[in-house]
Length: 52
Image (cartoon, rainbow, N blue to C red):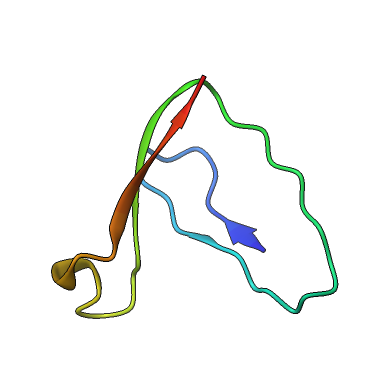
């Protein structure tokens, strides 16, 4: 897993091998996300996560 810290927009990648776990802590808010593979965002691979 890799992430950028301290920026308004960050790349966050989860690399699944099926053999590990990760615990994430988020600040409450609404977060938009999308697939960064070229063309995927434009074709609708986007979403929103709401953290309470």
